[in-house]
Length: 304
Image (cartoon, rainbow, N blue to C red; front, side, top):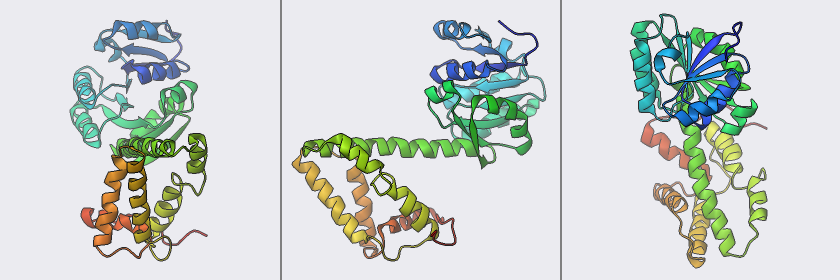
């Protein structure tokens, strides 16, 4: 049921994240939410401040629309449909996970109707969104993000701005790519530990330590060495490749199949073949710099 004095806002999508977004929005706005699934609409209707509807036209009556949709193709289609319904000056806030090119496609269909769009990718999980602790990754025009700020402040406890339209989504895809690949590597590592009779809780504690194998590659090798292009001293690539070979051998001894770890070892072989064996193994980053004709440095001095 709507509270007449509150601003009304539209929401497209009531999946797991969409329902959490609706719940957060309803703390400050009256929400009209659309979803094709009657079961999801019933769940949303049970939230005070949320009215679930079946027709997109009912959502399009409002000047601010939040998207929380399952695929990029659906996001582009919904934006195309909304372009013919929304009043000029309306704003779309995309929280679904899509590619930068999808944001550009959405903007292309909305712009002729005078409708703006920003990306506000959700870094956090459903539980964090529901509790009000979500982080949003933003991309878009400064003025459009400023217009979206009252909504962003409700659904996110913090924001990170990455640049123009699509930049927030690019950051989200990078984050997820790392998280999903690391998940495979972690499972492989825990399986190797178990095959050797090790206590996996102790392994978890070791990896989580500042000098552990999960954290230090980011905080030292990427954020210090690669950031400064500093590959002098440190652990030689030759030694790191030797350790990687030992990991493959131990996994074979323990009958543990490796996929991500095996693939990663190939990069060490390539780097050694290029004569990089005596540099710190963070020098692996220079392969991507050469392949992509880019620089991954972003600092000018090594932090003390």
